[in-house]
Image (tube, rainbow, N blue to C red; front, side):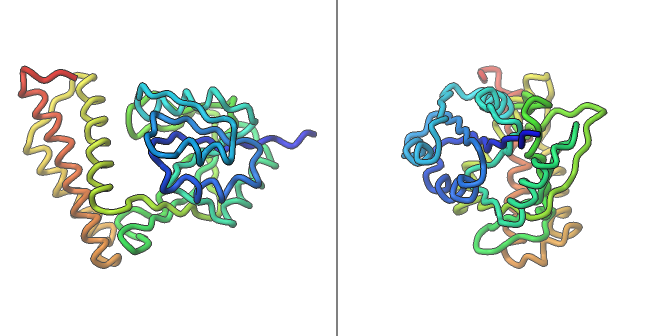
Length: 259
């Protein structure tokens, strides 16, 4: 039997700071690297082309799910492993991925854990670890849904999910400003999606969900064991939760608002 081939796929924008380090962890053991850019203004393209000639651009941002679907259209390998530019594949995870691809089990998708480095510390609580993400599957078997944010791989009843050994290291935020920028983008996409479905919100909902978010992360998920970083992450997450509900509320109360 012919050994199944494996591609790594990424959607990126202005990832010059992270992309090289990410691709260095995979380029010498995968068959194909596919990078779909959404209009970078830094040297993301230059870096990507050192590792692959399969670099594409779709600058009209359609949302995370649709962008991943577009990227998968360029994948020719039997399996696709999705990564973000701020992730690194550890040697243990590499071996698990290669073993899964070689076994080539029918109707099987694979998830793995991410260990995040945030503000100078690995975060092992706050509900952030093991943070399993479903990222490896046969290319022809499925794809991501079309959600604008928090996109997920589509699954049917006959599919099964197995967990790989090893972590991906996730360098999720460079600093507070980076966190706030990313958070604002996610909040807008969340509000866009809810508004498109005719959903409404209130400030009291935002406050309630924000308080609940903080208590869950810091107390129930033992974020206090992650020190000052655990407190900061829990507080920032509560703020982000409030902002997305406040955004939707503001839209519904502003007759001049246009998407």
